[in-house]
Image 1 (cartoon, one colour):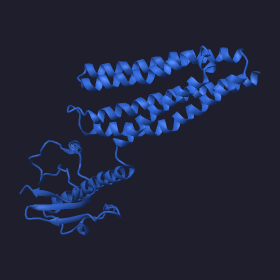
Image 2 (image 1 turned 90 degrees about the horizontal axis):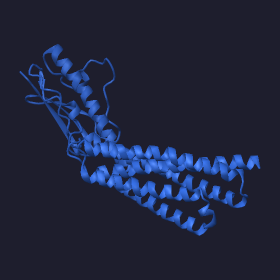
Image 3 (image 1 turned 180 degrees about the vertical axis):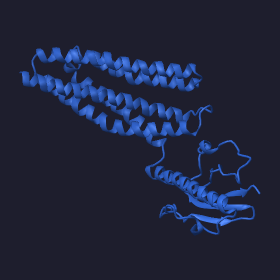
Length: 299
């Protein structure tokens, strides 16, 4: 009996842990979708990227832990139907009520955070949708386990199955919305390559400016730069980086898969240095395709 009790306790613990992880990251996914569908003009590019990252994290976690929860819950209920009333049920009730207490405290904290965001100037639409999401995701879960502690679902197996079917449909709908509102893995990879190319061009620009300040003239080509370290090279899937002299200075060129997002490179927009030898060195916004960044000599 003790071995069975330990087994059932472990299954119940695993089931509840999977449940709360599923709920937490389902809310992360839904909050991310809400932030993307209702962007706040007070936020910049990084808030959008953070929302998309939250959706991807939520998708990965829910895809793993929600099926785990369904399997473990099925095993728990199957075991309970084969056991007589006794120590196992007493331990299970304690575990369920304790988990409801701890989980409720954490999820109430989520509601506090939502209200704080609203009071600090967040969009009313976002506030209402997130609050409703918490109610409609957390409410059914608490209802299920409060009744479960009283043995309701053991006595009403078909209702339990229908409840699980409804929960699964809700999760699948949220997953579909999540997938529909983020870029594909290929698109994410191409954007990361775009960002790396900007970093490479900044490195090349620094070397050209350093050469100019030392020699009082621009290098004729990239091979003229000091070989203190290997020059950045474009990815194999993109055209090679190009450096060319212009009437007023020089230009660095590269091929990009996508247009940069608004404010994406605001981080690099430092105050203008009137004493700088080369102007316009902080503008890295780009369109799709081959783009040249022109830099102008100050004298």
